[in-house]
Image (cartoon, rainbow, N blue to C red):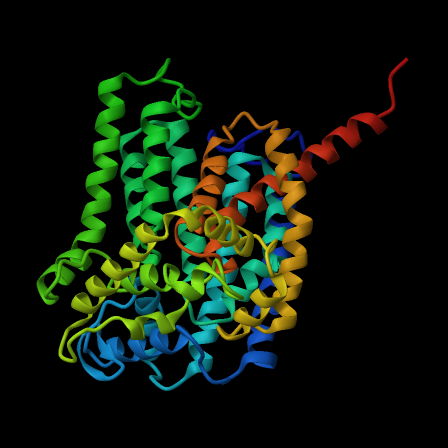
Length: 445
């Protein structure tokens, strides 16, 4: 059977003699290894271990949903809840409908989801870099501790990783197609990303605006059209992506606006996040640059207040503290970024990770892997050879660093940067391999 030609939006920057069937076999092997490791880790190490941190909320909310009480407060039961955006709890509820007591089943679902995310990384890398680099990106993602550590706990980062990959995939394909269908697909991806982690709406908007209005390349998949699209077409595609994103978000946002006393858009967690990151323990002492939940005890809120009223009070107190201590913010922001990239008190961060269900020894593996990956990724971004633009990855890295500086530093918030670094590292390794192949190729006399 003849080989199928490469899809027009797949990058051909890397010359490789690998056939499509060989590529699929290799990728299947990488995904099988990723699955064996993740599922094996859950069965051998995690099992039915007690839930810690936000795991308890996601597990309990999934059970509440499975019991037909859609996003009611599980702690204590009763009242409306929007502690976090809904996607993770909805996803976990798929197994809770079958068995509403099994923590293990939920962990196996999340581990399996992580395998699909590795496959999605391979798809993204194939679009941006080509077949050979796609296998490298999948191998890195499969063994990268910053990914699999998230895949074995019941939290939002696995779905957030997949959402970041989906946004970038749709953005790159849209660049080549410049069609209203892919503009709409980009809008769907951005909306879903916001339902996975609220801050990803900002990243999605930056990428969508850049691809529709600013990037002038593409149209490799549209041989019937020459030249860049007109400004009116660009604005129309951006508007379409925005409208579709709002349509995806609308049921959740409207529900929150109707249910809560104070205006609530994505979740009621933002107030506690702002307060915990802007109070004395987070500005000085051993936990500078981190987050302190005990600061909520310093804010007086009526006992009968709903989540939105509490969030508003926490937010106001946190912002007031940040304004009053603005002179300390530069040092605090630097500490936040340092914590997020394992350069400031990494040992303490492994202990903090342990409190969220991530084994300390595994966190140290992820830390060392990041130290090794970062210079390779930066080299890949510097010596970028793909005809696909690198600016979406650079924007993703910059967004993550700004997020750390503005909120607080913890490695699990580094998901967008990790996705960009995996792709950039794969590009660096593939470039090295290409240069080595050229250097060792015998010259013809």
